[in-house]
Length: 283
Image (cartoon, rainbow, N blue to C red; front, side):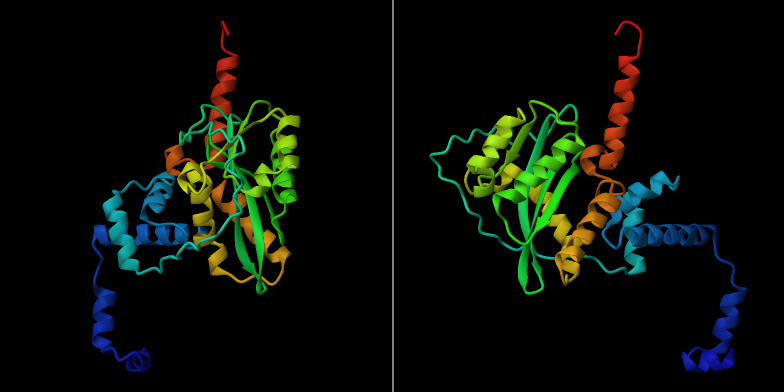
């Protein structure tokens, strides 16, 4: 032990004094909390801040204030994630196209499959670019379909929409909201919208706030996953997106819109309550 103390330039008497010192009740409680915080932080792959960590602590029966959570997190000196969102010039459809905005920045739905939003982003892939399309159900902010390709032709959004329709058992009269990118305004895609009895909705030209939910999702996807890695091929990218959406975003990430519930849990809660209501007497 004396050899170790010399190596780390610590007086042996300091070490032995520390061993004899009993920690206070508060110090022991803080140690337990720091261990729980570290486990949550690592499970989320360094993506959580104090707010979401505090939410997960409550799920474990550890109730502390958000201020204390901030202080404990700061004392642990864990690295934070920050990346700047890159700009991306889109192909915008002609203003002469009939493009009604059925959402009008009211990003709320009273049930699943009432309104979906979609967008496309890009990421570097082995010196080139790959493109990602997602569709999000506004009810619980759940990502219900996603596709990645090495081109951004209309088939990218058409295939993603077909995935969403199959996963949701082909619902009718869903509002499908997007920007005016050429993929969404193409003749083939609009025919597909009509074929499946959907209602197409568009953002105003050059106004990302009209599609803020999809824009926000891509911001955190890049910040929490894509910008932290390099990808050799499309398969690596697809696996990374799959892991982020299915294991983290939909299943583990507490969403502020859902009052701290994950998108999966918010939907399950809705269907559970709906089943009780439908089976209740007098319905």
